[in-house]
Amino acid sequence: MKQYFRSIVEGAIEKLVESGLPIDRSSIPIIIEYPDKKYGDYSTNVAFTISRILKKKPYDVAQILVDKIHDPNIEKIEVSGGFINFRVKRDFWYMVLERILKEREKYGSLNVGQGKRVNIEFVSANPTGPLHVGHGRGAVVGDSLARLLEKVGFEVTREYYINDAGKQVKLLGESILARMYELTGGEHTFPEDGYKGKYIYDLAKMALNEKPHVLDMEKEEAIEELSFWAVNRMMERINNDLRDLGIEFDVYFSERTLYNEEIKRTIEELEKKGYTYEKDGAIWFKSTPFGDEKDRVLIRSDGTPTYFASDIAYHRNKFLRNYDFYINVWGADHHGYIKRVKGAIKALGFDDSKLDILLIQMVNLVRNGKPVTMSKREGEIVTLRWLLDEVGKDAIRFIFLTRKQDAHLDFDISIATKQTEENPVFYVQYAHARICSIYRTAMEKNLDIDLTRNEIKYSLISEEEEIEILKKLAIFPDIIEACVKNYEPHRITFYLMELASLFHSYYNRFKVLEQNDDLRIARVALCEGVRIVIKEGLRLIGVSAPEVM
RNA sequence: GCGGCGGUAGCUCAGCAGGACAGAGCAGCGGACUUCUAAUCCGCUGGUCGGGGGUUCGAAUCCUCCCCGCCGCGCCA
Image (cartoon, rainbow, N blue to C red; front, side, top):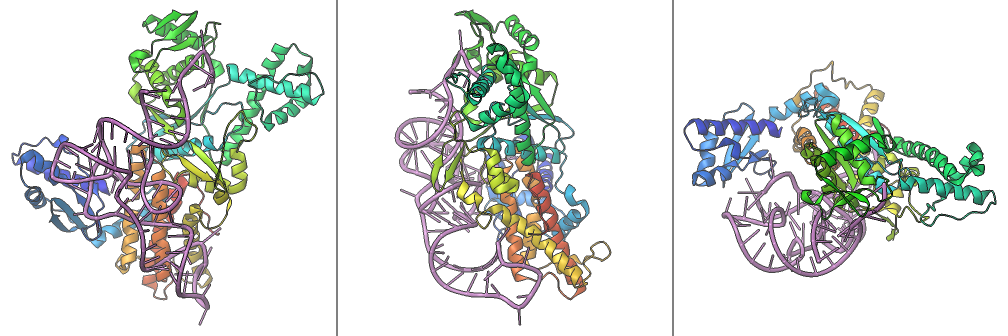
């Protein structure tokens, strides 16, 4: 709806320009806000901006602008200070509801994406251990963002980059082999930095079943075979966790496939462009010209490529697939990595501004007030699976989005485990279930609530609480737009809590199933609007909307 | 030391592209279920927006310095 007023204001400014005032229209950002109720429904501050250019009083500029505005949906325009406040006709809100009932789950689907192709890469956790709670946050933010992008007309590819090559993976195989020897009573030495988690024993047991022959193989070969096998087992497990979180990927990209050919070609390209040099037997990338603190190794002195080298090749591959833009969702601990990756992309001749990197801050697990540490190497980690079993998908997804992603999140397990109050997801879901319950009651009592066969007399929706709800429904598309523009899916969550709150208040004060047919139909129409938006809002963050609770 | 992100009510956090008197939830206190699900609602209490300077008609929001917390700074990934 903001867009509607934006264009009205734009039109007025245009008329000013036509009347000969020296204003550069493009230099004036048109900001539409929802002011305090007492001022109006929508407001703009453009008069302040223009007054600075024209050196006139904001109030006078506002007056001039107001004279140029005529719109059938506006009931009253007021100038206060320098603000221009619009009060909208009641019919305007009714039109919003009418539109929601007609468009249903399509309501709020803007077309800002225009079919542009977006690649969003997220999670990409190493297949050397189970997903933990921190991965979960990135997964939820990434997937919700993907849903929002789709909602506004982008063609989205969800991608998972599997680090199935290199030292860590070898260490995984080595750890499993050691446990296999241990379980069979054989002689073994556990690798120094090996993975100590309990899941390694699980894998070892599986391997004893499926691959007992590796025990008789030469160690290096055994490790290689086990590593490859274990990565697949881990990915099955990771995918299982993600699926239960409501997340599926379109593309799984294996780092292994980059080895030899693509990494080699990538480094050759960098060499050709003069961005590499040799030092201490290693090949380095000149990342300092791109703002990095120091240059980075691509090929170690032992001839093996670093993770960075394959990551450059990976990004090169992605850019060759030619998306309109790219989003990487990373843990905040990778922030130091941005400069060199973007630098490498630029060095390869691609437009690095097409890549946005989203950093997701750490999740601090708290149990009964005490912090729980998350270290992959230590035994006790809190896995995403454990949390899924405890609180379920809906609560996890919702709670992860009750904080903006660049703020640390304290995830209190003791609270999230409670299936009662305190858990905000229930509050929103309950609003949805309550509305469904109203419909069920109507059926039982044989009350006609059919919105398709009855004429909806919108003017009967006239209580202050009802108009407040309509206004809230009207800003849903603005919320979606803001989510996408700022890459901030958490705004949906806060919006839904506000909408649910308005509804619960209303529900407690007014009766929907009135005997009067017209009034009842009108109120059901309002409820249906709320229900549609809640359901769609929840869908966008991957949370279910139960009909019964 | 350098860099990133935070520092808003007792606690956990919002605050829309700088805007009109700083909001919500929880906790605390007091109320509302013979009436569409009380997982709800209503009322009250509660803040020098970490601190100093600056830009602006206007700053929680932008710039700068300082303080505190977490994280990163590998020929690890």
